Length: 312
Image (cartoon, rainbow, N blue to C red):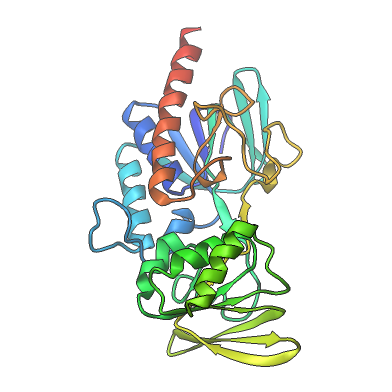
């Protein structure tokens, strides 16, 4: 890392970041992506993705992420590992503090994504993507005619549980205290309860996700202070998302009440030359295909920004 002025620095290497890099490097915009952990973001640790166009038989998250990376690097995108702790702006120059060292660029794209909030019990991390999931749209179809456990009691938990009834033979909804979702969703939940598709367990604390031979088979919980074991083929956890914007807290880039980055219709933040795309952006739909689309759109806006900057 030196004091050279980069055309574009992208923070993150998920589908949105890598798609943006494909577009920018094809137009000879020198692009470096910065990653603090795993290339590919949440998509890379998803066991199977079967709703991404062009893969009718499905594709593993790792394979898809690898293809994104290969495509971006084909046009000259560079990936460096390091953690960004701050973004600074001085007129037309942006400075990122990466592992306590400065990197300078004309433009910055923030595509750090979000991470699922965890319940922090044994088995959750070990079987992530292999029986433990956080996205019904992404993974629900793998559980046709199977028994599922859903953890959560808010709007997202009920919405996803209702969606999962399209596939699962039965769903046990584990709610730590009481259901807090909207009245409309609770009415829809009641319909599924009466139809025998969902059983609601109130005052139920999830303690452990059980597996044998690398396959989830049950959840150990405490219901009304009594131990219970609920058989299942998979577990979906819906207690919210945490945007990866901790490094922006108190900084120059504006966030909404949920910690997501606010942008205009051109994916630019309140700081000229600093853009955001994908799951980290306020209003994103949190799907691989839409994240990639936002990356492409952000890249076009970045190209126009750089063109204007160079003309002036």
